[in-house]
Image (tube, rainbow, N blue to C red; front, side, top):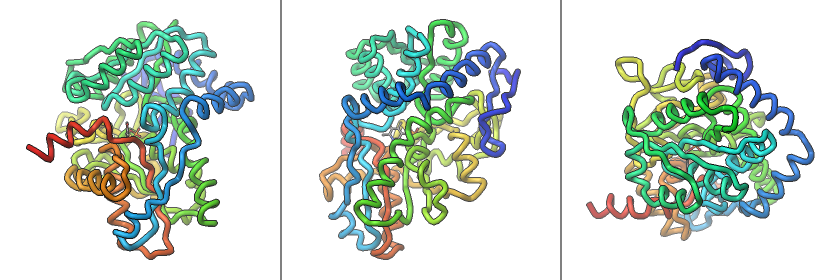
Length: 388
Ligand SMILES: *Cc1c(COP(=O)(O)O)cnc(C)c1O
């Protein structure tokens, strides 16, 4: 997309901003204004809280992983159970918040992009609930490896559009969705699935995902009487991680750790650049284009990352580490066996790093792993990987 205007707001250090054509900027300015108007509106908050509880099933538990802790024999490991949300992951927190905003803005049509299919399912679910027309853009390759999620979205009444342009992956679906928005902004709301994109999306998505750390902070104090040593979350675009970090960012003694797949090590190997309308650290190929990545976890397969994570990394407030697909696969099986919890392959990256770190720490240390989703969607893929 052409860089024709730059907004002054929505910066995290040098990262973020809004690099979009003027036409789209007008839509984003209106979105920002409406978001700022409603986010603190008592009626809006009451409605959001109502659906968080009655529809999503919050608050979800902060479960002490007693068997895993015993096995690892180091720091105490707690799991923030986003896997128990309706639709099985954290993404519904954000989909619900944005759709309530869309409703107040008078939109009739919702569009979204999806990688693993989880954000598509969350969006289609919220659209069914609120009677909105729903169009989901998905990379063709992703529609093939997440065929059941495509069927789920269709059951929920959404139209799924496979995108075969480019690599047929998540980033290509984002491009298509932005194109649709430019064409149809008068009646259409773009429900973005991660803490990425031009302002105000990263700020808005963080706002709606912050419920994760709002709850976990209260829960860990209730259970342990102190704050954790570290929060560990997997990072694709970075929405579950920023939601899990949010209420601890000002607690300087709490380590914040984002876990990326070694096959898509955005913050470890990336460089600052503008992609998809915002500036972040990103993986580029030799032509300066976003680089295709190949994680076993479709939800982590994005060459960029949210602007706030880019800033937390460069400012040194958070650390970002990598875990290989093989390590994640082992953690997937280990958590299933020890705790009876099958984690999403994305979340398995965070679990794998927590196990490594816990071994280096003492029994007085507390780790909170954000279990961003459940692994039911991945069981068939893992079956194939183990039995190949
Ligand atoms: C989509 C997804 C992710 C990655 O997205 P973020 O925006 O980085 O949170 C992680 N875990 C699960 C279960 C997902 O569905």
